[in-house]
Length: 123
Image (cartoon, rainbow, N blue to C red):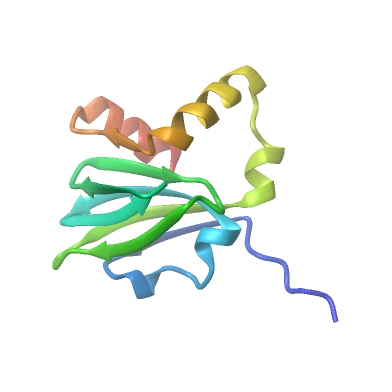
């Protein structure tokens, strides 16, 4: 029996960890824009927090554990299937720089409205 193909792109609004698809950390690259509250996690054994107007990007299969959300948490999430993302990166030089940076620094401050709007437009 053939495995069911995963959706290439999933966009959702989450307020709890149960709102994420099962095994999303394995199958998808996660783009999360925190709108209210915060989400905490261990990334490469370093405790991090993503707060309101911050963005986090996790590669599929990242060393990510201990996810917890605060009361009142709300986020927009864009999940991109692992192979689909890599197959559709337009600029390989930019891609390499972004990959190296994101593997060490998954958080971005988006308090600047222009930056936040750019992320929302990309979503």
